[in-house]
Length: 328
Image (cartoon, rainbow, N blue to C red; front, side):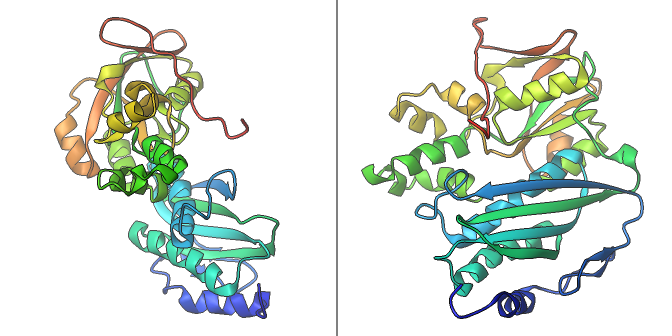
């Protein structure tokens, strides 16, 4: 880290952090541990991103990498319907990363924290052979029953999806083929942003929880894979109508450009960080739900007796897609 040591860098980090506007946080970064007085129930999740696995410094800025690390962790809080609370970050610093570059990563974290209302309450620095960020996020609710797990879906429930899918996978395709010039086209910008700068659906998660969501999960590893987790946790089956799945504008054209089926790309691709939820079908008001969620909400199927996930096209043909496996 150049001529600057750990303590000097931590001091610069603390100077850069905004004051925490969080009534639960009594002591934040700068002490041996953070002190919180949460009350009610808390939800805690840990997420990590590693260079060469989740990102490439040649294709993403350090600000974008820092922002994505926190945004993807917060997506788990969104899936619980939790109020954002505190975040803790462990930064693994490779030999070629200096103090100014570390602060660029911090700028991305601060940007997402400010937009999401979460306090950056602490963390750690360590040397590492590759750049990595491990983020722990804590969310809150008045009581445990307000938090939504994956396990409560019941036969007859409606399956709803926030936003659109396929944008992040299309953006990744463009980045992988950046040398051919497609990533510089105007239509590519929203797709690249979806891949490089995801937005956690925190407001949507709270709106779905308030509307009575029985089960919820974020689409980080692809709808095809994550729907299976929801089904397994609830001991139910899911039936999804493939053509009902909303696809981000521009993604079908990119899919076809690289010889991919648009529906398979949207349903099998990951990193869209939308929310899939099961809600009671009676009196389901998608328009009111979308207004509260601040994003489109689409009904894409239903919960049924049985197990597993059935995804079918209009003609009845089964669509076999899985999800992204972090260990593959």
